[in-house]
Amino acid sequence: GAPPGRPRTKFSAAQLQELERSFREQRYIGASEKRRLAAVLNLSQSQIKTWFQNRRMKFKRQTQDAR
Image (cartoon, rainbow, N blue to C red):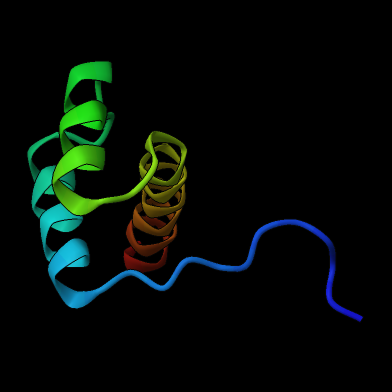
């Protein structure tokens, strides 16, 4: 069966657009920006934190593949 825990979050296009914009400005998110994004996008701060962690890994893979 499926592993226990919370289901995977499906981000809307608008949420992804804002997250990507924020990521382009700064790859590491501060506490105040995390709080702001969580409020604006109606997500939890831990969802924002996890998205940034995953996005940094994706960025790292892309830059390594380019070499």
